Image (spheres, rainbow, N blue to C red):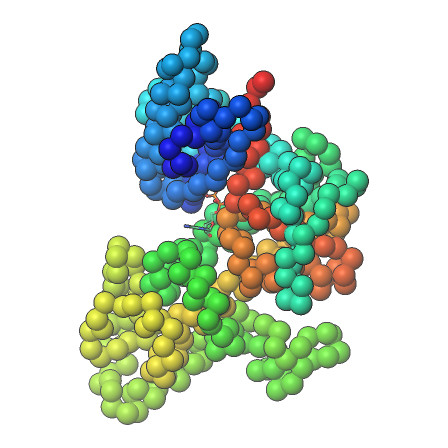
Length: 384
Ligand code: ADP
């Protein structure tokens, strides 16, 4: 909660498939100055009860501050958007004891984005390895643009003017995919742990690169030797090789035995984590550092896998974003959604994909509050 004396009068919540994003306005109780501050907070949607408890505390604070007023001020204003605004509608009203105004999710996204683009300095930036985080000031020609919102899934929205938009595409290979698959493949326990692993990893241990196939680059069609030809393309061969070596060294009596044991699922903190390679002895409780080790009997480190999958998902989205922008004649592409999380490799991959495919004609933009577009949009929709 913000400091004890700040009063909250207005809350907006965007409840998605993975995360519930909360935005609220707070002001010092006895301040005579106008204005206050916007606060941002997120919870896992699975922990919606914690989120509602947090909101209930904000409401109590509001009531305490207004109890002294006469006549009493109006009710605390609660706006809601995202699928959870429907799924948890009754629950929110019941816990908070206030009316909840629901708003359309896509409309909130673009209202939030327009606000960030036009009103907030040092919010929108471009990204490249050479020039990370170059802030851009709003220009005169904001429209039209493409918004790529990478949440659990991905939505592509063509925006032609204020509140003028169309959802032109989508893909289910999004943030939820990375979160889900890496929980299976690495045993990392949080999304941030996965991103940390990805930062440490070397995808060339897992991905088949142009250089692996050609032995050199393929300059004629513009492919460097480090270009990924096939995400996870090295895994099968390396895994088989490691199995054969293990067999030859007498570590395993029968191949069948290996297969049998690989099919035994393991659980780790409730997360189902099949082993990548079999081990003969039970391993102790895994630590994050274990996943980053370079043990030769585990040819695929969790860090390498995380890096590879992050690239695969981001490259795929970058490619679709480029194609959508091409179909609809858009040269400004904004990337939002909590998937990005300010992560350098994610932004670099998306940005590079746009630059590469458009031969520099199109530009990718990112936002400091990328996960809060919908929540801010809902916040702004309050009727005066
Ligand atoms: P949604 O509205 O579908 O929940 P978000 O824009 O909130 O979408 O993005 C959710 C995605 O953000 C997750 O699927 C995951 O990839 C990523 N993410 C970022 N931070 C977290 C976190 N703390 N816990 C889980 N996922 C996170």
